Structure formats: C-alpha cells, structure tokens
Length: 496
Ligand code: GLN
Image (cartoon, rainbow, N blue to C red; front, side, top):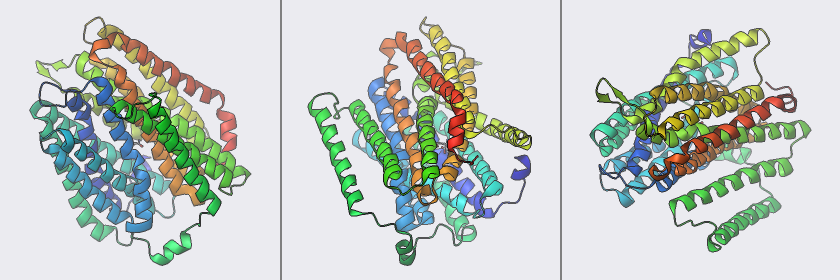
C-alpha cells in the first residue's frame, strides 16, 4: 500500500477525506459520552439503569446505519449525493446543537433522532462519491478507500479525545456542543471544496436517467411486499398483546427493532434469490453474501461493545489514574481508531506482500480470522472481569489488548467485506446490497446495546459469564468458517 498511497489522487478525495473526518469527529465524539450521559445520575445525566440506557444507545447506533438505506435511496432518486451530504451535514449539526441545550427529556431524544437522520443521509453517500472519483475501479480506488478510512479514524480519534474530555471533565452539553462545531467545520470544508473539486460528481439524477434506470416492480412482487409488511406488523402486535414483548419500554422497542431488521434482511435476500432473475453463479455468490452478512452482524455485535459493556467496564472497573490524574473513561474507546491508524498500513502491506507470492488469504479466511480473534479478545475480558468482581480495579492493559485484537480483526473484516460486497453483488443490485452491508452493522450495533443491558451495577457478578458467552459464540463461528472456507471460496465463482 505505501506505494499506492503515494500515487497522486484527485483533490476531491481530500475534500471528502476532511469532510468525513469532521463528521466522524462529531459522531464518535458524541457516541463516546452518550452511554455515560444516559447512565449518569450525579452530574446532570439522564440517570437510567443499564438495561434502559444500553437499549437506547443500541437503538440510536442501529438507526444511524439503518437510515443509510433511505439515505442512499434519496440521493440516487432525488437529491444526488452532493446535496444529500450537504443537507445531511446540516441536519447532523442541528442535532448536536439540540443535544447541547441542557434541557433533557424530549429535546434530548429529538436531538438523537435528528443526528441519526442526518447521518443516514450523509454516510452512505460520501463513500459512494469516493468510488465515483475512480470510475476505472481497481487498485487506485482501493488505495483511495484506504486513505478515506484513515480520515474516518483520524476524526474518531480527535472526536473521542476532545468531546470525551469536555463531556466527562467539564459538562456533558459542552461535549455535545463540541460535536456540533466539528460538523460545522466539515460543512465548511465540503461547501468550498466541492464547488471546486467535485464538479460534475454526485449530481441529482435527471428525469431521463431515472426513467432509463428504473426497473419496474411487477404487481405480484408488490403484493408479496405488502403482504410481508402486513405479516410483520401483525406479528409485532401479537407479541405486544401476548406480553412477550413490551414495546413501550426502551428494551422492548430495541428488541422489536431487531425483529424488523432481521425481517428486512431475510426478505431482501429471499427476494433477490427467488425473484431477482439471477443465474446459478450469481445465486451462489448471493449465498456467500448471506454468510458474510451473518459474520459481519456478529462481528459488529462484539466490536461495538466498545461503546457499551466495555465502556461500562472502563468507567467502573479499570484503573485509570496516571500521575494523580484520572483519565476520562471514554478515552479508552480511542484505542480502536488509534490502532487502525497504526495497523492499517501494516496489514495492507502484508496483504500486498502475500499477494505477490500468491498467498493472500481469501475473503472467507480473513473473515474467519477476524471473528476468531474477536472471540479470543473476549476471553481477555473474562480474565479482566474475574479481577473486577473481587472489587479490585483491573489493569488498563486488559482493555488495551482487547482493543488491539479488535482492530486487527476489524481490518480483516470491515474493508474486506465492503469490497467483497461490491465485487460479488450482481451488478444491478450493487447499491441495494451495499445498503444491506450497512444493515448488518445496524443489527450488530443493536445487539451490542441490548447485550450490555446485563452490565448493571447491581449484578456485576455475572460479568465474566456474559463476556464468556460472546467469546465462545464468536470464536465458534470463526472456527466454523475456517473449516468451511473452501466451499465458500468456490461459491464465489472465481472472484477474490
Ligand atoms: N468505523 C467505520 C466507520 O465509521 C466502519 C463502521 C461500519 O461499517 N460499521 O465508518
């Protein structure tokens, strides 16, 4: 990668780099203090219990990624990517401004919903313009995405550092305000930069284009679609009435959202397999995408616990005093972007080195490796929590090492999955399937929130068992993928 990174890239890439850097500054910065704010009952937080706070956190982070489906659609069909990014950024900034008002209650939730809607509009579209800058695809596009991923993590790093510090050491709302300023800077970069360097890209589609590209949905498919929505609504109502699910509570609502996300994904995959007009090879590739979807959802469910169970662990059970100064617990989330910045170039060089010798592991092997590592990292947390339940503080090295493993795993799963989805998807379904890739992240985030509901102050004794569950389940899935990597690779039908 170093040689690819030094190639000349269009200026537009750097505009997108800085715009996304500031957007991620605001997103990850705010997210770093969100759960702490929800749980805090001493210094002006919402005073929720762990089950409620983590369910709201999960719902929020899941909506951010789920809303990228309508966000992508709006850009493709109405605004074009550039306007979608601009409006999305403004909406995100307004959301953070609302959060900065120390009013709590309704206004706080309004702020969250606003940020989630804005992010759904901005996030998928900024990545697609990066792709548009390199219509020829290939190694230059891959290199551009690596640079872009650096921007994402640079933004996260400084966001967590600054917003985390202000939120925990000064005041929560000051932190949220800093996130708004970050987004404002992103908007300024984008406004001035895109007028000069993104001319002709991400424009709104013309009526003619829309007509040419639209694929008419048959009456039968429409009827099946409406039927499925009706069945889902009836199912949810039945669960509510029978008392199996109480969607008037945050946790019940999050579980309901989980059912909806799984139903959307399953119906979509079934739809393209049955009615998508795919040939044999394409169908087998879609099966691989389903396996990668499951693996990704499981991966994010573990990885995104950085903001939930691991954040709680950093806050309550980790030794954080350095030379008499207490390090803000949110700063622990910074290990993920930090390690990405350090490890991404190393891993990219390793893949290039192995490719040159014809030994670059295939995507299913990288996924298997990523999941196994993620699973093993949770055994580290089992050891850490066994110390914590004795009432002692665990050394910060446990979390540091856990995050190190998480990041190596992320670099085996996240970029690999993203590019596999663009390559394996039948061409006419690429954008939709990209959306489904983000839905996997949405599901993972939701589970990461719901799972952490068990991490309440009252029952800390169950921490080791909870981490153990994630460790065993994830490692087992990873190992299973190791066993079956060959058939999965064959189903990819010659694509690497
Ligand atoms: N950390 C990356 C980002 O924020 C990837 C997130 C994801 O795909 N779930 O863009």
